[in-house]
Length: 151
Image (cartoon, rainbow, N blue to C red; front, side, top):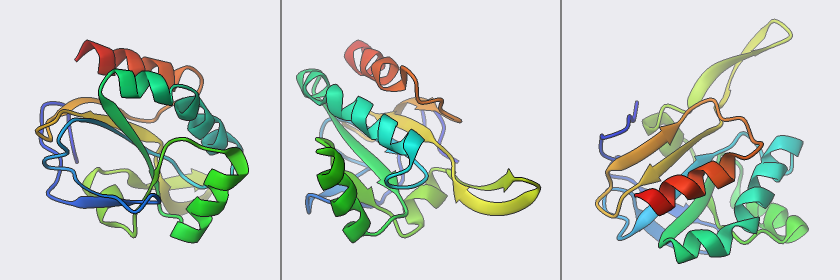
């Protein structure tokens, strides 16, 4: 599991915009926020919150990428439907496994594997500056922006 002060794994994230970013050396500050599913209420709110602050993150020299296990096609529909301004990362498993966000969950007594809502702020050299686990959506994007400005 990735912890603050540790290093991001030597993996690349491919975004819906067609970029490939080396997490071990992203070349600038990078926010990776992991979310469970495209076009669900909490995930939509979180994506809209990061979109609303996209220019502020850019001014702070920080890129933002949302990551889920949804397909590129699903990401494209989600982005278009809500006019999202942050790219979405395509994860078939390696990213969420490496960051420890693919976890056992429970709903109505049924156990299943799913994405834990978590966010990581990486430095230009791939060091994890800050990690947020079990994220609650309200005010989260603003809190991450504050950390990005302070680092």
